[in-house]
Length: 526
Image (cartoon, rainbow, N blue to C red):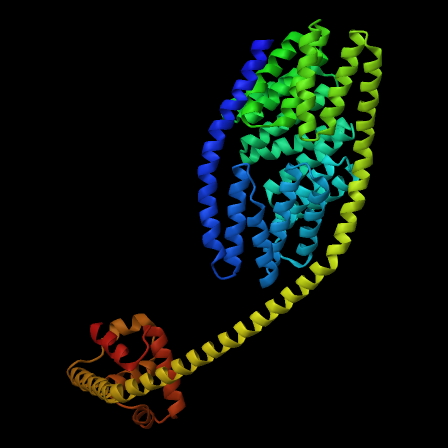
């Protein structure tokens, strides 16, 4: 056991040195970028770049609050509502990571209030889901349900499958908190189906883990083990170490419930180096306390006490009341086994006090966050009003400018087109007249030529009869081939001009031609 404790301490020191070196290098780079951004003119792009830079500090596990505060201050100055809301949402996430749930609720609520007039539905959904997580941490299940279902409704309307999956997962977790396991199972299965469609391995892993946890609480241990092992396989496949450790922790709890304490301890021990590496004191304290509980059942009371106390100290460091309560309850068992009933009673009182304080603190924090929300609402309303006025002013100015540009362009185009058309008209008018004269001369030439041919060639009456022409139509056709006009034909045949037009129309139809020239050519061919 002494060797095991020394190994844990050595791991912590080694990891701390490696992480410190890499963080120092990364922090210098981030500080340089922040310095450059600060001197740039205030703009929406600048705010977005600051928020992106802040995300990097979170990824490095060393959030730089001055960066996000700068983004918020600039957003207020230029009335950039989405930037302001995103900034407060980010501060809410950081506050939650620091276990400051009161501030987290206040920041998330403020972000949601600011987005009431915004069209950025996706950001609104993110804020609602984030607020739901914080409410869960405060054991405010009703409030968590309200915001998760709002997020789910918006996500489905917005058709954003990722946000739908997050909301379903949140609702399932609230049902776990309220011990309504069948309802929780329904939402996690819906979520799992969606994550399969999205091909999101991380989401699938969360669902499998949560379903396994539900079966664990329902004491369906075989089913729980199947789902937890599936989740563990996914974490190993995609090399997500911290998630792997969480699965070891749950499997440890599973075998503890099955009273297979040695097997449970082996799983818990596999999680320790990973939690140490990621500096996850919450899970590390839980793991050490549970190892101590297992050792109490296997008669290793001295080692049990050491692990419970180390885990309890870690829980106190991060003020994790759930793990503090777990630690003192484990000490109750230890002192009872060692027959130190006075200390057992004292530990029981402390555990009970911490358990009660969780409920009382949740109510207190809810009241405080509501008060903060009320106090900031007026300021946010004023910012929203100014932002709307600024947006309208910018839109009007842009609209006037665009109108001026469009009118100028249209005027220029009209003048240019008119000038060009006039030029074309003057240039081509003579050519068009010449072409028409040429066509007319050509037409007259064809008529003269056909007249000459007609004089030398009589109508082929035997072939004409095939077209079903009447005697009068044949007579008219003969005059046409001779080059006579309608008036001349009418005088020759002692009929009206309209009668001749009717005969010509019928001739065209029967010969399937459109004019005299086509008719004459067709007759000549025949």
